[in-house]
Image 1 (cartoon, rainbow, N blue to C red):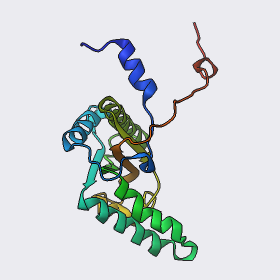
Image 2 (image 1 turned 120 degrees about the horizontal axis):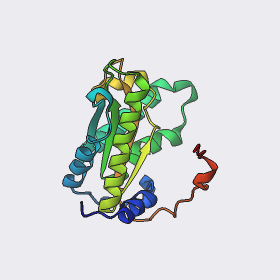
Image 3 (image 1 turned 45 degrees about the vertical axis):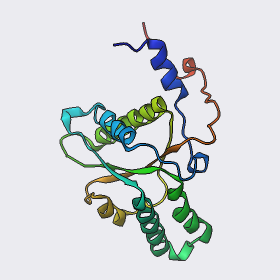
Image 4 (image 1 turned 90 degrees about the vertical axis):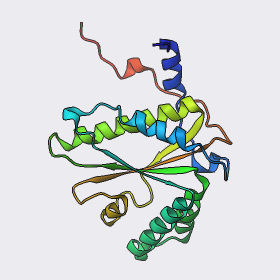
Length: 192
């Protein structure tokens, strides 16, 4: 391969979440980049080759359909604790993105569920790293309708599957600040 270890290290270290308000409004990421993100997602580790990820991509008018769906479901499900500002955010934030990818986990029952959740999470990390390589901004949120059982069908999921959130993608207008981590030595124990 023509990629140096240093380049891989920098790509991983510089990966950041870029929130919808940091996107360039109205600017679209080319579909070919989104397609490459999805191809790279499919190369995530998968025990027993279950490939449990299922993605639904919203762009163009699809963003409005997504926004209206989640806002309406929120209004219906949370009538007693409804907040107008949250409702308006659910309607407006999706329109700031170029693409939104619903992250689903199709349950196979061939392996423990946690292994399939981990596999989908690895797939999302591959999307994050691909977006970083192309200079696109992205953000994985578990907000909106993620935990509403009734939302699964809208995203092609059954009751045994899981909706694991939404991956917002857009052109970066305002970069995220540099990341910081505590020293890895505080979280690692070596036994020799």
